Each structure stands twice: as structure tokens, then as C-alpha cells.
Image (cartoon, rainbow, N blue to C red):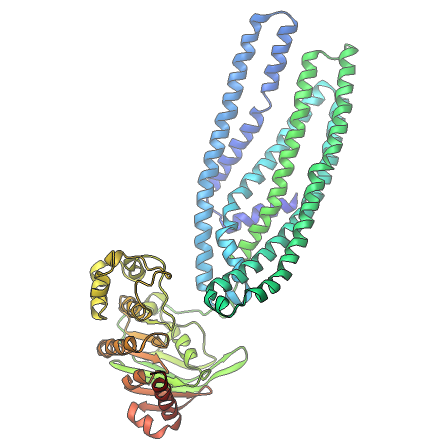
Length: 576
């Protein structure tokens, strides 16, 4: 029983509110179970008046029937109502908690598979209300069985002992069976997560899978996971088959024995027919009640697997968790400074004594070979990682001292792959600022307003990946507009022109020239036309800055900058 109580306790830790609704669910379930014991009394009464040839007395028991069933169905209605309220609460509130936990744990996907997270957020949360429902129903079934046993003891002690022993044996066998079923059920969930992981990766790279004909090899790899799932599923079904087709034989053997015994009592005038009908009704009710209780306990075991999966994600503690301060100064000019910054990732030095300053009204461009540490600088400025030594300052204040609210409203940016949600343009922009006037101003500033107005539904046009209503370049421009809506002083741009057409790159370059008049821009790029825009260049090589300063000066003195720029120009020429 402790196992089931622990499951219920874990649920309360996940969502500790709405205790009053849980109490109402318990009361309504209790009333429903107790009221279900009453109709057999009316049935026995009717048989009694019939055997006494007193038909007029039947109306008393008919009225009792109506009252008993009114209690039964009204308590059932109340129970359904509480289930609906609690189901709504658990689904929405726990999903919010999961989303918040995932969004604030940068390394959660290193420890928990995406398949498990997706399944948990979409599937497992649907069954939380059933944990309460099954726990209460199982508990009330125990109460109901105690009442039935007392009734048996009142009429015949021997029958009561037989029923009690039967129930104990039946519960013992079924409880052991539940543990086995739950174990194998957990196994099936584990391998379902792995299949979902592979499916998720396939969907993210479907074009490559088709072009390179990877599906046959993926199928071979997935077959191992499918076979593991099959083993777990067969184990679960084996014990389910035992549960429903072998163990119940005990019930029916005892049932026949008990009926013969009761018939013998009637023949020997030790029991009247109405008492016989009453006890048979209660025995049938005992079997039904025990089966329902066992089903609820089995379901509770299975739901316990889901509760633990949710709890494991909510209890996840990030090794990379960064504590931020409470500096609320929102008057930021935008001077960014790295002072002797060292950063290690997975015990490897990625940045080694990096120092530079980025000023407002300038485009500061970071260049270098792949793996030189460029993206690490951007990630540090987004506060996704913490440095090992040194300082990162904005306006002479450590970036870790600013509150989340102030920092996110002053540091924004755009990433290499344009990412918009499958919702309307207005809704995408509203994620940052819901003011329609501000949205239009931002889009006008980056020169995308007219294009949006000419779309089928203007700003209400839904952006779908498969429709290509706007190009990848236009998406990047839209995301620059979205970044502007944050009113950020500092814009971080990570290879934003690497996957778009040259014309769009030139267009974005013109936008950046305008934006630098009231922003600090820090940009990573390998495109020569974007390097040309830079006021200051920072050249990285193997985590060290080997050159920095005004663009033309760095070009003259840094061979790596000339190599990167000229090589990129040459590759562009070959493509053209």
C-alpha cells in the first residue's frame, strides 16, 4: 500500500494546490460507493413482501429504490464534476511548470532525451487527474468491502470468513501481478521515448533523409529499439493475460462453493430466500468491487510511472545553472567589454584570455575559423554559460549582476537559422511586443512592412514552413524587426546571412548600417560583404584574439583576416 501512497504524495509535490477539489472528489466517491450498497436492501424487501403475499408493502421499497438511486447518480455527477475541474487544473498548470523548467535549463537535453520530454509534456500530463481518481476509488473500494464484510458477519460468520479469506488471497495475487505489469509498462515507455527521439530527428532532417536514402539504414537501427519494446510489451501482456484469465478462476470456484452452501442453508430452513438474494447480491458486489479496486491499483501503478517521469524533469537540476543579480538599472548605453575572459566547456579551453571592447554606434564583427570560439562569445553574452575567469561588463557592470528582466530587454539578437513559430506574423511579433503600432514601426524600419501588407492576410498571415510565402532572407529581416521590438541597446547577430541569397545579404547590410546609429551591434560572419560593413574587427584563432581594432588596420596587419576575407570572396566568385 505504501507504493500507492508514495505515488499520490509525488503527485501532490508536482501540483500541490486544489486540495479542496480532491476532498470533494473523495467525499463524492465515498457517497457513491456507500449508496451502491443500498439497492440490494430494497430488492430483498420486495422479495420479502412478495413471499408474504403483501403486495401493498411493495411501494415502500419502490420509493426506497428511487431514493437510493438518486443518491447514487447525484454523487456520481458530483464526482464527474470534480474530475473535470481537477483534470483541467493539472493539465494546464503542470504543463506550464514543465515548459518553464525546460526553458530555463540550458543543458536538460544533454541529460533527458527529447523523446521523453515530448511524450511527457503531451501525453503523461493527461493522466495526472487519474492518479487522484484511481487512488480515491481504490481507497473507497476498501471502505465498501469493509461494509460488505460487516453485513456478511451480521447474517452469517462462516460466510464472512470465507469471503474475507478469498479477498485476501485474490488481492495478494493481483497485487504481485500489478508490480510485474507496471515494471514492463515502464520498459515500453522507455523504448517508446527512443523511437520518438529518432522520429523527431528524422522530421528535423527529412530532406537529407530522402536525398541520401537513409531510411533503410535508419530502419535497421530502429529495429533494435523496436525489438526491445516488443520484449517489454510481451512481458506486460503475459502478466495481463494471467491477471484476467487465470487468477479469476479462484473467484469462480469459491463462488460456486458459496452458492451451494447458501442453498443448503435455505433448504435446511436456516436462511430465508430474501436473505439468500441479499447475500448473493453482496457477494457479487464483493467480486465487482474487488476487481474495480485491483484495476484502479493497476492503473495507479502505471500512472505512477508517468508521475515519476514528470517529477524527474521538474526536479532536474542544471549543472550549468547561473545565478543572476538584481541590478534594475535600465539606462544602458551599450558598451560591452570582455576582460581577460577564460571559458572552459567540457574540460576544454574554448576562450583563452579574451579581451575587447564593443562600442555603441558601431558594428563589431567577430571572425575566425570554425571552432575558434566565436559562438561561445555570443552564448556568453546571452548568459547561457558562465565564464571561468575574467569579467564581462556592460557599462562597467558585470552582466551577471543585471536582473533577467533588464538584461533581456537590453540584449537581443538573431540566430543563423531563421526561426519563426507557425502562427501569424502579428503573433510572432507579439511575443516581444503586442503593440500593433510598434510592430508596424519596426517592420517599416527594416523595410519589410510593404511585403507583409501585400501578403494574403497582411500581418495576420500565418507563416508555415511548407508554404514559402516569404523567403529565408525575409524571415531574417522579420526576426531583426522582432529583436528591435525588445528596445534592446545591444544586438547580437550570429551568421544571419549564411543561409540566404546574396541579394538578401546586401539588403540586411543596409539595415545594419541604419541600426548601428542607435545600437551596439556584435556580429559573427564569414561573408565578405558583411565583413566590409564592420567598424571594428575581432579575429579569433583557437580561442585567442590575434588581432582587433578598426577594420582597415586589422586587414593590413592580420594575415588570417586577409585569408578569410579573400578566400570567401574567391568562393563567392566561383559560385557566381
